[in-house]
Length: 196
Image (cartoon, rainbow, N blue to C red; front, side):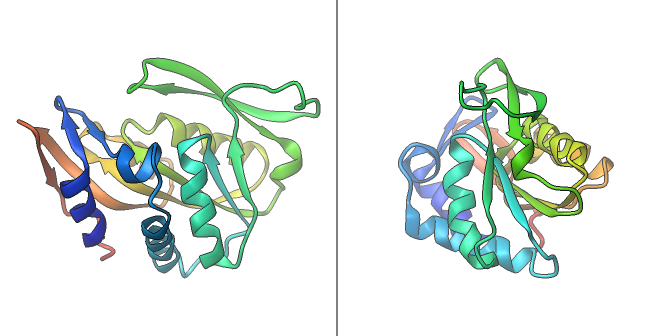
């Protein structure tokens, strides 16, 4: 998605060799108009799939999923919680996910009320690095007896191998921008986002 690459070039900041800061439009301050365009692009790329639910992780995935849902006819957006609230008293699916950016391990939880056998679930997230969060969501979907219709990623750091792991597990991955390398403050994009 050329508009996304340009947005990363103009508004993003490269930190070291493996971090891209895009908090000005994606995960701290949200550019809703631009996220709507991202949602349209996900709908274009997954137009061949019926989507019953969209699944993401709190908090940065929620805005992306909510802006994408209208383009699929408003399926429910479900987000995995990183902490079990007191209100989550019914059963839930749970998987661990490591965040290499934050250096933490979270337990992702989704209430069993919100995922059902046979449903087609689209997983969306802002970043894909090593694929830990997406792999945890895949496991949650499969535990529920539902099907992973695909995984949509806004920004993939291709050099960290997450999409390869997910594809090896039989998942379709569509990344809107794939970063090949980050060096000397420069971001180089790769050609894996061939859906353009």
